[in-house]
Amino acid sequence: MNTEKILAICLSPDQGGLELYFIKLIKYYKMLGRKIHVGCTRKSYITQSVTDNKIECHNEGVFRLIKNFILLRKYILIKNIEFLHVSWAKDIFLAVLLKIFTSGNIKIIFYRQMKLSRSKKDFYHKFIYKNIDLFLVITDNLKAEAKKYLPVPSNKIKKLTYGIEIPPFSKVVDKKTFFSKNSLDENIPTVGIFSRIEEQKGQHLVLDAINQYIDNIQLCIIGHAMDNEYKNRLLKDAADYNLTNNLRFIDFVESPMSYMPCFDIIILPTYEETFGLIVAEAMLMKVAVIGSNAGGVPEIISNRENGLLFETKNANDLSEQINILLNDSDLRNKLILNGYDYANKQYAYEAHFDKLEKMIDSI
Image (tube, rainbow, N blue to C red; front, side, top):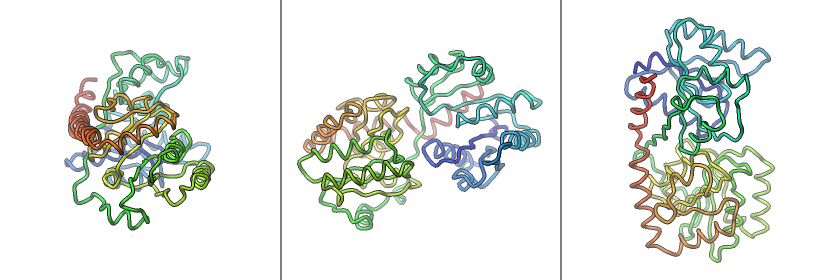
């Protein structure tokens, strides 16, 4: 695969898992001495993280779609682009316009990382999706949703799990330093949650569960506050439970995996996570995990084999799983070992990109 023929487009202004994956895609090939062209939005997190071979698009204005179309079309013609790699669903329409109104045989690869919940088989979506040449998904669950809800031929839908890069030992955060900086007690079990702060991410369930636990537990919530009202609710809950001194909010960090060994348990309490990247990352960092039994998480966690599952939205059940994990060291060590072995085989970093290249070459 000639990566110089690829324009990877992600005009998302956000700073989350989708954007982190996009940046890793670009940096991986740069590390190999191969370049991929990048279309991103001005002043976005992606723009700040990617320095080479990029074209910055407009993020404001009524006519931004037209302006971005003109910008990208010109870039495609100058660079002889043959493939458009799309990560953000909102960019699909723009990619289809570029394919139709640009000379040459341009193909679109769309990597779907978010769940589907409703049928999209009307005239508009049939027009859009017939122009996608390769529809990639991250889980079997999402693959089934795509077949059910989208007008995409089954032979164009392929599963491509994430590839996860383990940070070098030198980049792993020192636990003693981290605890001291955040006024945490090293003698108390500490739970970590890595996600945006919003209700469907379920941080309140963990607070409720910790409140039911007999012994003392500390909780760190690491991520951007997308909903300040919800964050205030968490603070109020902590106060009502007399857990104010046990709760820490830490803003988004560039490398979540580097912080994970600081915690005894990492919990993914989301109502429904499409994949559950944090769980797989924690396994690779040899940390015990508990995840919500919904979405793509059960594809990663085999209950009581490499982690624990709890009934979605059920704080009582979550509290029971925390109790099991903290009071059964043999089980905890078994889950950690099995989790590492599983994730190391399933989410090898280089293998992900090898599969991606073969899939693109096949269209």
